[in-house]
Image 1 (cartoon, helix red, strand yellow):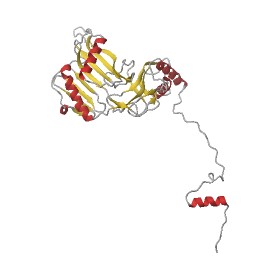
Image 2 (tube, one colour; image 1 turned 120 degrees about the horizontal axis):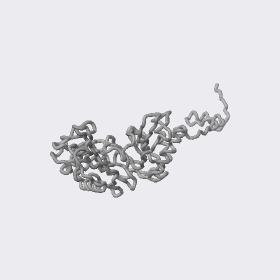
Image 3 (tube, one colour; image 1 turned 135 degrees about the horizontal axis):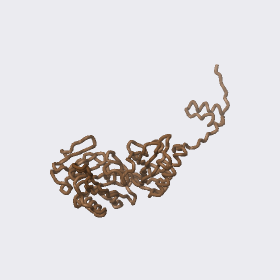
Image 4 (cartoon, helix red, strand yellow; image 1 turned 180 degrees about the vertical axis):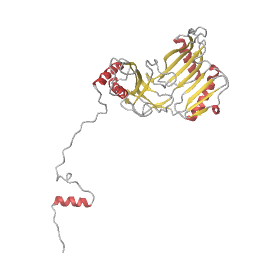
Length: 369
């Protein structure tokens, strides 16, 4: 005996669809009213800062606005860098060192086999005290006459004279390759002195000028390259002789893909303040104790220990805190200068980095980083 079950048409259609794996849910079939949708506001990625930190942020923003900066929404290219091949760093270092050896101190020529290695660090020294150093991750190269750098005596050169000597040396030695939109700039001129004590009296001797140090930087499309990279440091001695140089310079290969939008001082200052809150926690310094000694903008080039694929917009803000409540401190806070990044600005990854510096840092950062 057969039993037939008669179903309403709508229910029968749903059952058939379930058997074929094409079922509509009761809501989709119109049999049940849909649940009301809950609209949630977007979650802010900015940390909630206390009133004290917000006041510090206003001060940082004001200092950044008074200095050159990116315009909010400004269209900016990102530059792809040429790949640094460790094997080529070794041969390139020896080639450049031997090219300038006669000018810097002479002695026996370097060979690739003579370079000792300690992880990414290569080094050698010849019979006349000329030391060669290179780092395979960044392509950093240094050749200095250790008998005359921070030793000996240098004539008093004007900054203009020193800069002209350094530029000529870099050009003739072909230490860097410049693109049509790239320019070599004079970032700073420093003077290294030494002073001793008279053995019999214990009095200080007259200061001796050992070296005039010229720091050459670079610009891309009118924007400076900031950070410990993107520079050539030239040491002068005697009447203006080159006795050594550091080269931390990554060559640009091309413009990388789509452009990014620049970040103005207001948004950048929020990031800087957020990083500052991580340093000081629940005991923020007062606005009177905080000082922005320098705020830089441009394309960030990292130091000699890091591999880097791109030059990207960034800010480097030098913040000093002098307070009776806590020990004095000085930090360089690096944050992105654009709406996005294609690789982390710094290592370890993160769009912000805090670098501790001595109070009142030098005008252009360290000579060798």
